Length: 223
Image 1 (cartoon, rainbow, N blue to C red):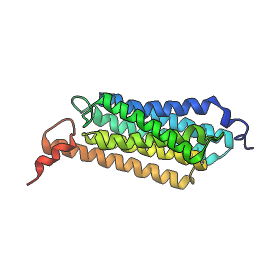
Image 2 (image 1 turned 90 degrees about the vertical axis):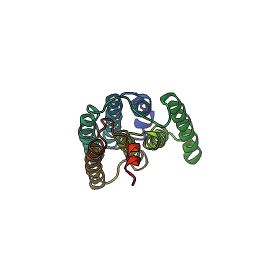
Image 3 (image 1 turned 180 degrees about the vertical axis):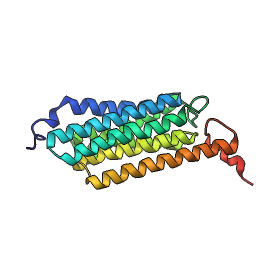
């Protein structure tokens, strides 16, 4: 039985979880310690999995429940664990081309733009789009911002994972879930990519004799 029309659009559960998803995305931008950044990313993934589970319970779509379980295991468990292992070996704080307070202000502006433009495109709606789609667009922009502005390769990987989380939320908002085989394939590709990028960070440290994985130091290898 589809309970979506009567319950989900008016549920505070989805709104609260979506708010937690956005807040954890902003915490990724404002935290100074790599471990704190990875912790914020884990909270972001947990909120995402709970949103998918809530939609599954409301719609009766079992494949969304399985996707929520995969998101919890891979996005909130395996991937943060891989990143956390590497973050514990990093020395110092997060390095960025933009200082953290300025970055927070820029991301706040990106959130405003995401909400205003999404409302322009989709209008005022009473379904899950009203709560989740603007937030997924906002976190997509935040993820791109992290990837562009962070100097350390590990933090760029965090931005990539944050971006993929936002795309996952958009899929749940727009279509109530992609086919399960697609979702599983994306998660496995993401996990493999994170593992390879972690190896890449390790190689940077070995080549440059550093402990912070600063990707800008690769410029010194030019002949």
